[in-house]
Amino acid sequence: MSNQTRMQPLVEFEVEGREPGPSKRSSGAGLGKILKSPAARVVVIIVCIAAVGFGLTQLIGGVAGPSNNWPRVRIMHVDTGQLRWLQTGPNATMPDGYHPVEYCFQNQCGPEGGTPVILNEYIGKPEQTNCSKCGARVVGHNPRPKEYEGVIPTDWRR
Image 1 (spheres, one colour):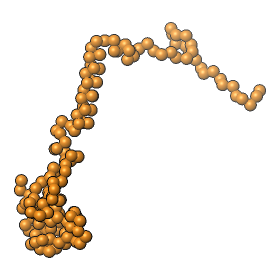
Image 2 (image 1 turned 90 degrees about the vertical axis):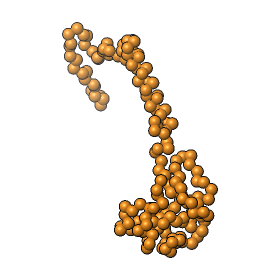
Image 3 (image 1 turned 180 degrees about the vertical axis):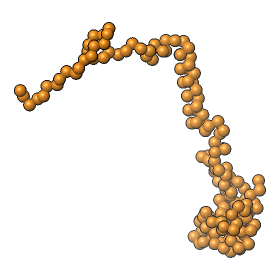
């Protein structure tokens, strides 16, 4: 006998009404048989239309629209000091002369809810930013002291 081992045939079971050997595909209800029914075709068409509609609404921006999904940012005009809200989003543009604000919560600014300040780095100045009201240093994402947590800035009235 050689080094090759011979594969022994698998044990075949006899099933009544079938010839022994490898199993054959069943003749059960396949997709082709199911889709021959008119009711099944209607259901498949409705499911496909619903899937395409759902995909399109998600692609376009959902049922609620994109404006409800983006946060608003407080902005201030660099020359006039006028404050307003900017609705952010993929098509939002900053109006001329306006920049985002940070709030100073130090000294007398804290109890009032904060004083809006445009950071010097937003307008291209290299020096640090100080609050125009109390002179304290203001940084990006300026932290609110613990004693003023929950105090809403007075200029946030809509």
